[in-house]
Length: 226
Image (cartoon, rainbow, N blue to C red):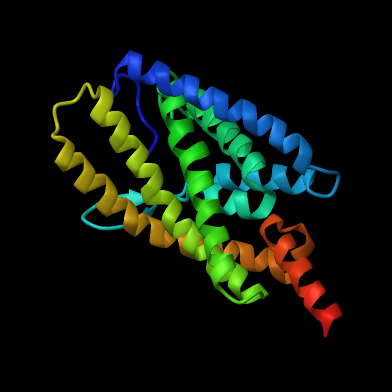
């Protein structure tokens, strides 16, 4: 998912970098409203956790491997605005320190993972939370669904970029089949890790989980009505 330099042409990379910059700037404003003294440390811990686990790969199929993207996890724990900023910082550090993704392609990666991955994952979580019963178990189930959805959606972002400005000669059908099929499998692993991680935080400090706060208020209202 980390795109190397030269894989996508400069005009396409520049255009997506501009879109990514607008998204990150909007997230800065949104994060200023959602962060407080209680949630700020969790945001830092979430970014650190994602940075670490993105270095760990797990086998998928046919010799391929995947790793946690973390967009859905971060969005559920600290909110989508802060998650976008956290993922962007992680991607920047990885590109600078480990050459994991090219610097000229950073905007492409930020668009795919920090924007598409985060917001598609959080949208999937909200949908699951709306459909499922309003309880803690549903938060875990919604987290799994969010992680599952976020990865192939981010992969589709790369397919779009490839279709617009690829420097490689592989057919678009081949790229789509390889990227989407593989990342659906990776998404299953992402969903499991996301669900388990959210469940662990919910077990000890549910008040810190951004995605649970609305549900908690609904539960309290129901109890009062009874």
